[in-house]
Length: 390
Ligand SMILES: *Cc1c(COP(=O)(O)O)cnc(C)c1O
Image (cartoon, rainbow, N blue to C red):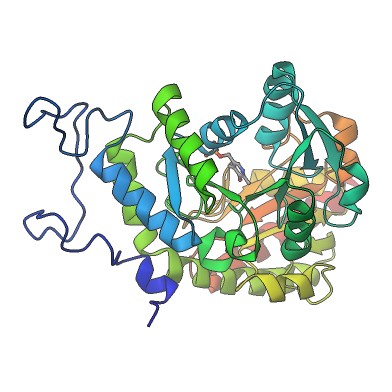
């Protein structure tokens, strides 16, 4: 019987019993840069930690198993993972990229990848016919679903089918749902990306990134690249992520429960004009997500009546923190305009629907009563300030 994902987060069957770690339940941190050889021409399996380290290998096996990949790569951040992934492409290649993406990915593509001769078409992958953008030199489709921060949902199976027909890689940044709620490789994607800083780590205490694949040729290429470019995750950080993953299942479930309650609550607020959460029935991607994911996640975006309302909320939150990032146990509120998407040109931001009255909430695992209590207080204060100014 295949183990459930909640169990896989805690136990990795293949690795059990292979090595004697004195029965340590917590996988040891191999804080070593290099390894002694038993004899000339022999190796323990580890030669130098840039290539591989046992703690990193353990983490990579866990993440590969959660995503249903043949291999995973642990990098020093999500952006390090995306940068390494871009080394799979050559000058002259063309990539179709989702229009609404994590701001750092847009910045990387615009200011780093393009100068290396790689072309991009920025497309609303959730609603456009992607086929018309495919050119002779197109090599990949790069998407997020749901997207950051507008929560657009792309049909993964349809995108994978199109990619297969045209011999393209489908690359999916799966950070927002984590492998607990969505497994793009199982729906036909070739490569999955995670910012491990977010749900996999889950505690806002370390940065990490992952690439996961089920394609032999991508795996070979990435093993060469991680050894050559050197952004593999350090042993202690690997251990932190391994520890975080143990509770991924219960964290995802609790955060999602909280997010559903908060989304419904926000809908009732006079200063809120729109709540964008795929878990709401009226969200255009709701039905697709029900089919392709096991949950709706805990990220939601909402529009306020005015810029003032948004800024006042950021000023007034206390337990909820005004901070960048997401996916941790703590609830965070983000202002995409000046934080995650500050480097995205204003026209593109506005085209995607991000305005100065847009806020993004990463719902944590606190008692939902306390979250609602804080939000009620903050919203009441904001309403009175905004009214008295008018
Ligand atoms: C945060 C994030 C990244 C970048 O990851 P870092 O760990 O911050 O480098 C990439 N994609 C998405 C969707 C993210 O949320």
